[in-house]
Amino acid sequence: MAFKYQGSLAESVSHLCGRGKGILAADESPGTLGKRLKNTPELSHLENVEETRRQYREILVTSETGSCFGGIILHEETLLQSTKDGKPFVEILKGKGVLPGIKVDQGLAPLGEEETVTKGLDTLEERCAKYREQGARFAKWRSALKVTGSLPSRQCIEENAEQLARYARICQEQGLVPIVEPEILITSDYDMARSREVSTQVLKEVVRRLQEHKVDMKLCLLKPQMVMPGSDCPTQAGSDEVAAATLDVFDECLPGDLAGVFFLSGGLTEEQATVNLNKINLLARERYNNAQPWKLSFSFGRALQASVLKLWKGDPSNAPACREQSLALAQANSKACEGLYQP
Ligand code: 13P
Image 1: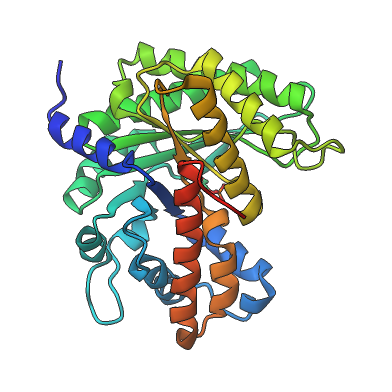
Image 2: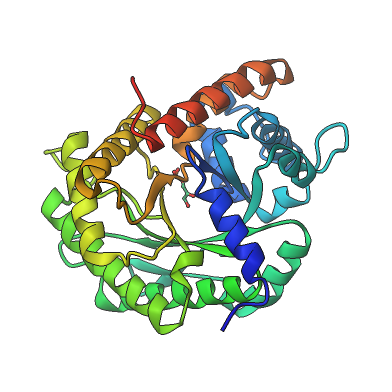
């Protein structure tokens, strides 16, 4: 049965998956952006209030990144904000051909002592309808899975997969393309074998639940981390190894009709994230010839913003340099989607 907004969903997916296009994740909650400000020495003097966040997001929204970004994920607060001159952000994005997206989860809640599930399902349907009216065309829901020798627990994998599937189905019914983000946290010492094992378990369960809830895969995007050792593992992997492990896991877990995979950057540096994405696309070209099942692109947060934030320093006179840097990062990743990035 077709969804009420079937045509619009298909148009949005096709736009987001356009050639050389990726997604900017600029949807940090006020708390998370506050932490980024505090942890960046150049910005630690700034007060984390709505106007500070608006000024920073204005730079991202007004950068000339329309040929590289199919969409930008915004926080609820940002969706309704405007430039200093009073132009709504949503209108500016529409004018550039960039789809406004919206983070619809409401953060993490404890599951037992060490794990989490995600909040926000109870009010999701009405919020999705409202966000669509306000201009959003796609959405994001993040779950976070911690890895140790014994975690994630089976309960954690199953509950988060179930939430992601229910979220995705509600989004499609309400006319928002769902980005399904089961993030396996990188901050740990697990090795490559464990990363492959956990990624496979998690993605298999997520796909099983999506299918159970009759989520239309052709109208759905996945946002995983790349398959690699945790950041504290003494043996790190090069981009060739990351690319091979990532595609091996996808071959085993992902259905061919899934519309696209948009990676998170998860704490990688800007350069590492781009080099890995480039390698993944080069390997995919070799492995699948002309029959690549999914678009392999980016939905980076930190890897598209870290150096922009540093340059900004909270000073409006730095905005032009920030916009240039934002564009340079966007262009590098746009090339990496095609396997054309050269460091
Ligand atoms: P990072 O690329 O910084 O991991 O952020 C992506 C994101 O949207 C996390 O939810």
